[in-house]
Image (cartoon, rainbow over all chains, first blue to last red; front, side, top):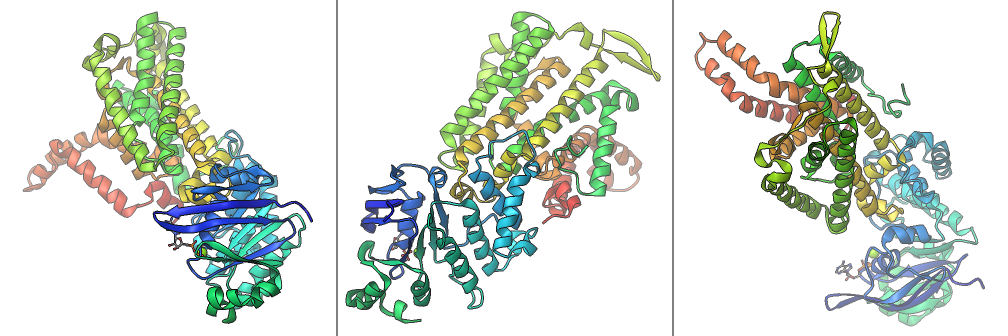
Length: 254
Length: 349
Ligand SMILES: Nc1ncnc2c1ncn2[C@@H]1O[C@H](COP(=O)(O)OP(=O)(O)O)[C@@H](O)[C@H]1O
Ligand SMILES: [Mg+2]
């Protein structure tokens, strides 16, 4: 068993009196895809925000590759190896598809403070961005402005950005939300491809049961901010407590 | 050519023609438009192109609103004036003064940036407003040091003054003033190309990304505060150099010519008219605005006389109303070219 890449210890955040994430302790290992489930408002997105740094924890710790990152700003966590795709589409809307990916590669290669060369002169960054677009089949849209893309293509571009970032830990927050039945499988294939890398740790917030069944090695369940179940998909899904109290309709829906 | 422009070609024939025309007009201004008034206008255009472009670097590329830009311009100008006042006339003192202005501007910009950019962009705008006002008061109070409201005359080396007669070329008298103009022109051109380089560098791309979506830029690994801080410093330092050039050209510096809020407003108008986030917008916007500022009065005087027989019109066109017409021009330009003249000519958005 490889050692965990990401660990949260008693991770907690309070908004006023409301405890949105409640002492969640959990370890995630490379080569493993963990599905995070729970009803709306359970605290899944907030848990992600605590890990990637958009929200500061009230108490508890986050460790990445054994290093305490609880107090680091967002960008420093990204540099340390966290990659996050957001629940609501989050891109540079007026830049081109290629530039969106190129900026990610440029960030990863730490060339952002280069003042004196031409951005277009960094052919290697462009070539890599193009290669990523090729992999997700967005090459034909490379020169389009992002805001002109369909919702499905925008979500695909977010996954492309994650691939370009090459993080140690991938965090996907409902990547297929709002996508058509035809578009969703493409995203899931990409996530499966990411998962096939034994070095990659993948966290996936997802509601659709068939998706979880086909992709997840493990499921954790959040309810009212607390971690209430953790185990192999079959076990967790079979557990009565989880079925009735916490997942209710959402899991059996599909 | 492509390298000189940092790969950022004007991308529109009309714009290219316009830019080349402005470049030629400025490059040969002493010969094309003899007379001290037109040379003053040309020099002012050169310097304000740099000032406005450096503001565009901040506002148009970085998405940062600052009201302290004229303060940095003033620091550059006063740097030269005070150093020459203390050390005496000479190229050494002149250069040292410009370097002092550059350094002081950079440090103050860094302090402002690190103090306020962490919080919120609006906080930055407020801080710059407060500091710029404080500095303006300080300058008029410390009259022993800065000359107060009267400002200071600057004794630049004689070679750069009209007293230095060098002969005639093509019927135009060449004096130190002509040399001084070419110092201004050359310095401005260099600074403009430098900024063009910066906005097209990987750093410039990050600034645009931050302006588009700072949250996203941070999430993919760019430390937004540091990028904004560096942009603030660069912009302030270029403004300071423009100020130094201005001081050398005018041989005078005073609160009204460098620090005033009206100048800050003019800069904003020039950026918006030309087109934010384009660099070339600074060239077009400045040229049009400064020309209007300097010649609209005459034009209106002429029109007013020509229409003397028509009722109401001469009243409306009276030269005293030039500011009103400048306002009308501004509103029309923003209405018809919301992305600025350059944005319109490039046909983007
Ligand atoms: N910044 C915030 N301020 C106050 N309350 C918040 C904030 N972010 C999330 N919450 C609350 O925390 C709870 C968990 O939300 P969220 O993490 O988005 O749930 P999920 O992603 O599981 O649907 C919700 O009750 C939400 O209203
Ligand atoms: Mg959520």
